[in-house]
Amino acid sequence: MREHEAELAELSVAVAVVTFEAGFLARQYVEESGLVWPLLVDEKRELYRGYGMLAASFWDIWGPKTWLAYGKALLSGQQLQQSQGDISQRGGDVLIDPEGMVRLHHVGEGPADRPSLTLIMKTIRQ
Image 1 (cartoon, rainbow, N blue to C red):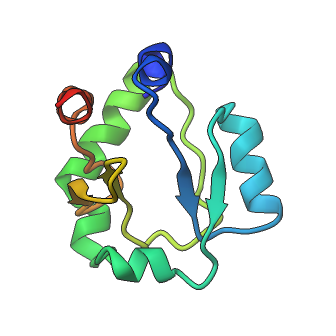
Image 2 (image 1 turned 180 degrees about the horizontal axis):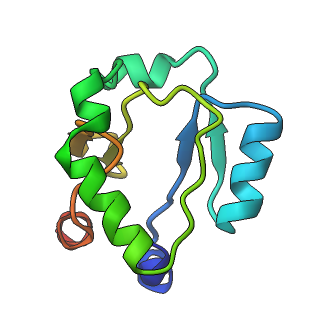
């Protein structure tokens, strides 16, 4: 998403990142990732429940897609870091239009499961 930051601003798209981690872990994430968008903390996980992002199974978390994503990250020179939080919490992507209609709702099957940036940008442009 960061490589489309200028286009998102041009299209008046407001981006927010949601986490259930508060305090030190949230601040650490912002610092390490260089996050430029607001970070919303949902400690009670109400948004996660509301959008069906419940706990992932062991196979979802440690399945082939995850190992493939980790392998690609290592081959590209990235350093993997051990998670400090709840790794069973599903993530996802939700796009809501200015009228409040959900235009994209993706619940990740595991840490490597995200909709493509192409799909996200196509949905935004529509």
